[in-house]
Length: 304
Image (cartoon, rainbow, N blue to C red; front, side, top):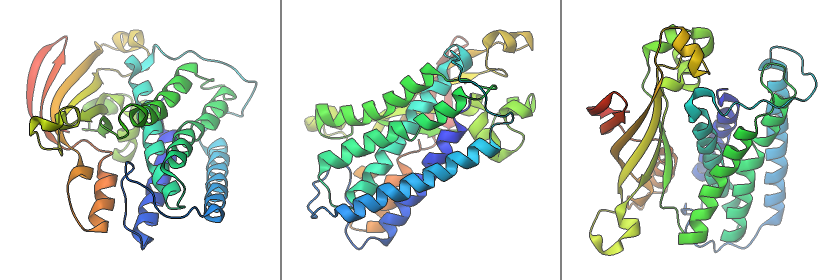
């Protein structure tokens, strides 16, 4: 099932972080910097309350608008075989980004770096969990253990990097080119451009970008220049591979190698530029790429 609901929650948090950073009179600090402000627990509790209200409201709205049929008895559905698992990578990406962005929100309260990281990681998982529970009561979906594992993997990747390196070195990112496959089944893959980038898995590519400089500080490699490994799928016009084959398509996986930019490593004194750089680090830049699949190796001079 497309991760549209969780991605919508992430977009809401994305806007909250941007507004908080834009309105703050303090210098924006990256997630690996030291927090020196005194804890403001009143602000922290207010933030918890605001997030709870916003999220409860969004869940209520989803329960009334997203689910076509009335919620019924709880059921479990193993969907790990669907969509060549790219939807699970999407869940990892979304929960990771929610963690990363909520850390920035918690930092505004002046709590310690460790507290902000832990609260952010917990948020990345628990902001997704109620959605999975709603799916469990939906006759159209069912509770997916695979989704829950992927939702946990995102915060684990974020928090684990601080546990091992005390910084983020591997950045999950997203890119999307529109594909003609959505017109084959618009009810499933999206009937317009705004739906397709969320529903058409054939166009979604998830990347993991890292700068060699992070692992070899004396290499002389630019800290902002990353190598990026991507994963995508093609010819999937149904969740199950067999159904796509029955419709005349031959699904396959694609892997990519490209270059990328870690915008947070670009030095600037502008608070606004640092804020924008933090936000841009959710996306993979358009760049030349080499793709690998069962159809062979191909060079793409410009891929997003």
